[in-house]
Length: 439
Ligand code: SAM
Ligand code: SF4
Ligand code: F3S
Image (cartoon, rainbow, N blue to C red; front, side):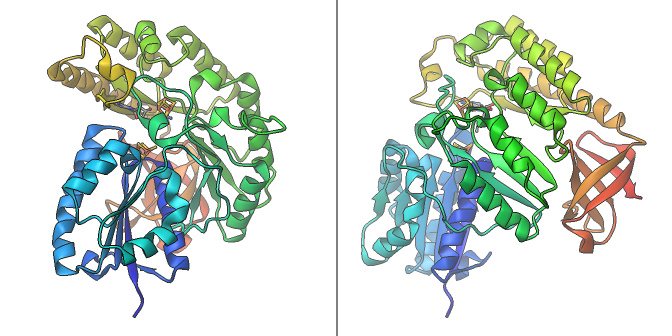
């Protein structure tokens, strides 16, 4: 009988793509996907540790899996990803969750087949967490589930060490993939019918710094832009510090690169930005936004914001509100600062009380929601190019897709046109999406 697998994914798009690779390797080993945990022969949790809430959810999931293990002792339970990459957490999992058969880190993904073999043979937990990254491993299979837009990792790791962030400790130093490998992968995806490539890295603007001969992200984008048959190029995440005029120019000139730039600012106060080690000021950021808006008139800027970083005063927070007001983001991901042990901010004095953080995030979300709706209302009457993703999650009779600015557009239609580019005239604006009719 065919062996079955499930991969549960937590965290960001980098993790989503790692899970596609885990699934690809499992399929090459002969496993087939299932949604039924009771039927699975292997269950992997690909984890995130960027905030405590993410980790708590995963501890809860591990607790639930004890039940599956007692019903089917032969099932292999594995945990990997960013949470498992932290040595002390991996050790805690081994002790507190002995039903987990396999623990491996972000640098050990390519070893999955041999790790499964070892887990099958051993009575005790197999643990493989390399402390440092190896070289980039190419040609791993990926099982992409989307079918319309493809995630393509262009670089791994992060060298920025923002003082609140755990990512550099669990993802290692920056390593760029070779241009030829990226191009080859995207050409293969286009041949499979993909319309859109999403280029991924924690800081895509650092792309190429470690390559010989040196080249940068703008150079890579120009190469990807030449791929025949590819209709849309997106990328995330951009660090404002490394966003230069050459890159703005390449985006402005390209017809394929979408008009959405995710440009996390994190905070609006210069004092807090410095304490966060972000490497720019509010004035620099606003000037960058101005240059982008001038060169790309229809640009939709999105961002990440943190409230309640240690030492953040009411005045600092007002600087964040002021910046949000000035930039007019089309969407923002807002987070309450969360202490991550091992990061410099965890040791900082003046941690902000929970109720103050809560009050600030409520005010920030209120402001951004107001801006969301206002910006969406400005789209009413316009005709937008939409890439159809499939049935709407909230209404199966409707289709849902993304316009070039990455806004969700909902409209009536049949799911046969999934994966097609269509024109939709917008008649209604909501806070989170646009509604219209195909023309
Ligand atoms: N590399 C990207 C960047 O520089 O913005 C994304 C990194 S992280 C995966 C996504 C977001 O999580 C960050 O932009 C930040 O807003 C948030 N984040 C990271 N660490 C956090 C922490 N300790 N508490 C709250 N939010 C955090
Ligand atoms: Fe974290 Fe900063 Fe790196 Fe983004 S750039 S992953 S926020 S350290
Ligand atoms: Fe989480 Fe790791 Fe991404 S910590 S946000 S899954 S890089």
